[in-house]
Length: 166
Image (cartoon, rainbow, N blue to C red; front, side, top):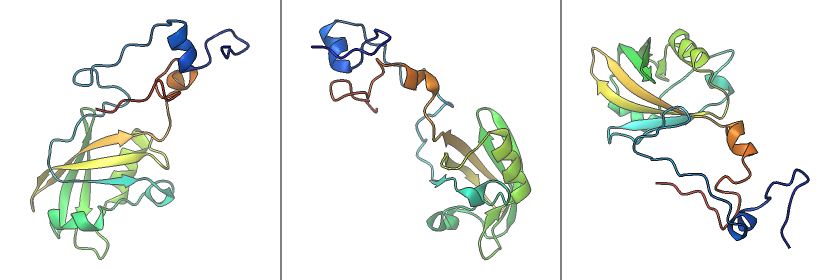
């Protein structure tokens, strides 16, 4: 006996397999970057931060992970965050007891990219000197797009249809 919902659509991955419903095509993970252009890291040093209230409104504080600070200059240095072809200028305050990015610059980045609590930011260090620091940032959203949640045939709904990570 198959499980169906009141709208008549297939309710599980097992039913889909038994009824020969075609599965959605898997994306080409090398060329079809989706959901904010997440891509593999280049192998350069990086740190990540899962955003909390203190990283966003009203304070907008962002600091590198403690074990990452040795990669950065211990002085005030112009810093650039790049994300999806755009860049944001700010200052990294490496002299402070708790080194931070300038709150005004970080706030502009956070607001323009609609960052929210529990989003994750990966900061990959592309360049670091006493003259400037450049990070390429990737944003991993804490929410799942509604198109995925509404698609009952989406991978990950059951053991028979797992999510495959490359």
